[in-house]
Length: 75
Image (cartoon, rainbow, N blue to C red; front, side, top):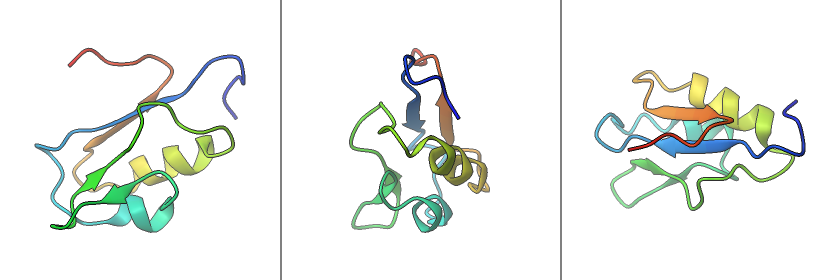
């Protein structure tokens, strides 16, 4: 589990997302789908208690379109 004093960040690369929906199948609390079935997140910060599921959902993405980590990436 992540250190509770450090936030865990998440980003979906919209250009890489192909709409497989596996992330949302694993963690629907975090990964949302737009009208076309592409993933997005409502916040860059993973809510407390969803760290493991956030990582699992990212790992399930066949296109590796999701970043989860302790450092917020520069886009």
